[in-house]
Amino acid sequence: MTAATRKRRREIPGTMIFDGDLARIGYALNRMCFSFNAAECREAFLRDEEAYMTRYNLTEAQKEAVRSRQVLKMIAAGGHPYYLAKLAGIFGLDMQDIGAQQTGVTKEAFQAKLVAAGA
Image (cartoon, rainbow, N blue to C red; front, side, top):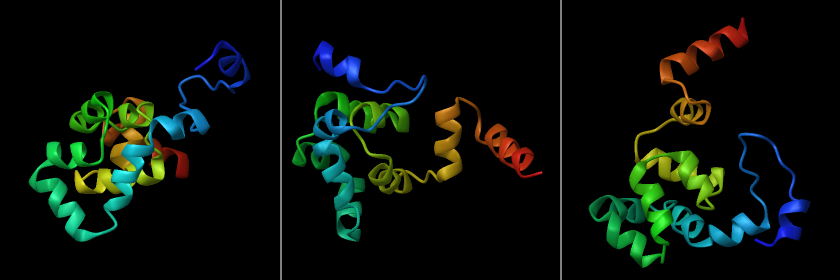
C-alpha cells in the first residue's frame, strides 16, 4: 500500500476497513470460503485443511490465520466477514463466538453485554 493510499483510507480505531486493497489481498481466502456453500467442499476441507488451503493458493499468512481459528486474523488477511462466517460455521463458531473474539472478551461476557444492552 502506498503512502497516498494510507492517507486516503478512513481510520476507525480497532476496526479493519474492508476496502479494495483488502479485497485484492483476500481474494483467495474469500474464494475458498465461498466454496463452502457446497457440502462436499466443507467435507473436503475437514478431511485435509492444509491441502484444501493449498488448492486455493492461500498465502502463508492466510493459512496461519485459518489455522489459528481467530476471525480477526482472517479479516486482517483479507477475509470478508460474510464469507468468513461460512468458515466459522465449519469450526463450530457462532456469531456470539465471533463477537467475543472481536471485542476481546469471553463468550459468556459477550452474552452478558448483549443481555445488558437489551434491557
